[in-house]
Length: 275
Image 1 (tube, rainbow, N blue to C red):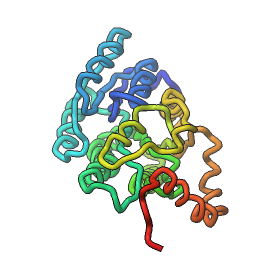
Image 2: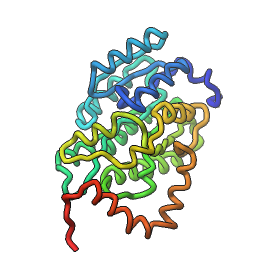
Image 3: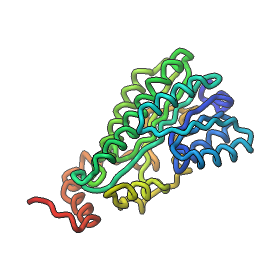
Image 4: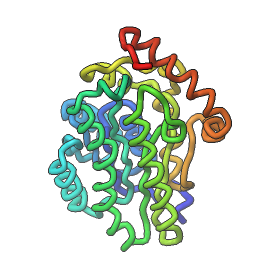
């Protein structure tokens, strides 16, 4: 039954980080499939514009502005979502922060914010919204991760580690919940065309990420994420060929050890490292 789009029409999805990029495109794709939406992000003005455009197409939309780096906002968001008529059937943990540079230079404020948004927010939201899904024996939790979860890389030490945590978290929950109607899935995109890189660079001490030149569209990632509703699977890579990346790490990790630092030094020419 869940392997059909008609089953999900009229269900409610909570999408974090919905004001731009992947989150915005996921919201549009879900609305096109007949789901109702709860949208959250920091930028209320952008959420309002998106909500109006989706409502004009017949979608029911609730907007709950929240700063997911603040635990009180995460708890308030979950409480409001659970109070929504019918509750939440789909949770899309999309919100995420990045920062590129030497970890030793990473400002502590950025470190704390990144860990709160990338790790603690999806963990807490999942914990609070999962029990009703289990009780109904129906639900989807889709975590938007990154291929960096599978290939530790210089310059994105904490970002990659946060996504590796999300990868392990997703895998464990997927196996724990197997057979009870609730699926936990992960989307691992490569670089994505969005505001993510510019916003990462705008944070104190941050730089543009070299891999941005290989980016795929946010629409492509969103389409793959939404397809996990009727056809859930533990992990899906975008593009699919990135499924080979873990094998590259196992096979050529020694080469990455040597070449990776050179790429970082090229983007940070003033940085000198001890011998």
